[in-house]
Image 1: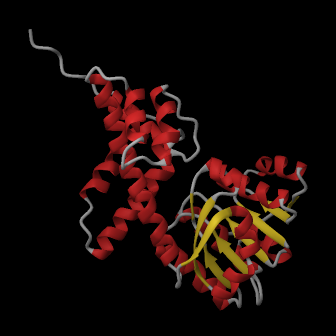
Image 2: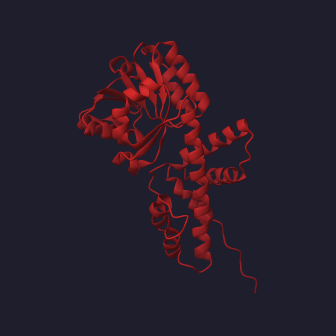
Image 3: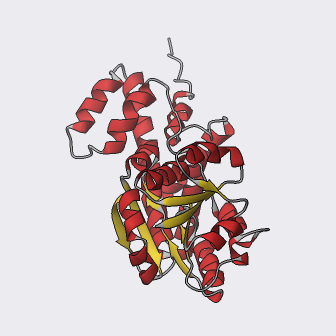
Length: 294
């Protein structure tokens, strides 16, 4: 299968590399062309624009940072709309809101193409290992055609129905994850300030009912103050914002998520946006403990 791939950030690069390793012919494009170099070394071709990719390939995948980037690749100069046509499939794996997906879907289908949103649950390591969870929605026939690619990219694919459902599911998942990370950060700092060993807390948590892979993976590096970006904090905050907007649309009260969003915003104001989303831990650590009253 020959596919196109647009967007070679942390996730996009790992996914495209996986496709190459499994025998797919891949044509790539990225706004910063130098990010294509490593993929070219592994057999990828490079196109000069998103339009050139979709002209060449029957199926084009994208993994972009936010709604504005996703829309720009479709509607901007040399964008997808210039060459999408009958029989072509466009699969957007970016994490965006349902409204953005609907706008993209509408223009693709008007041009005779097929659209599928397919955001993923998972970060850098699962992307490298082909262990993502794919949350697809849109044209079911396209979903079935690209399952061979999804089976390389992920450990499980869900087909969720109409366009927008994939975006909504991803935002709910990331809202829960972001809220958990904040509570986890507060717990680690609370343990340390109370005279407990935070690493022992990790052992206790891992043996209980709230044991989970995120605590297991992130906890030791957080304690060490290491936040190498697997999922940048600025993107987590974007997802919290979009989830809260979905809450506004559906009249769902989300005070925990709102507080978590404020913590991620504070972390961004501290210059931590490019680090892993676990760096929100540093905002809790930065709060000075109350002075002792003698």
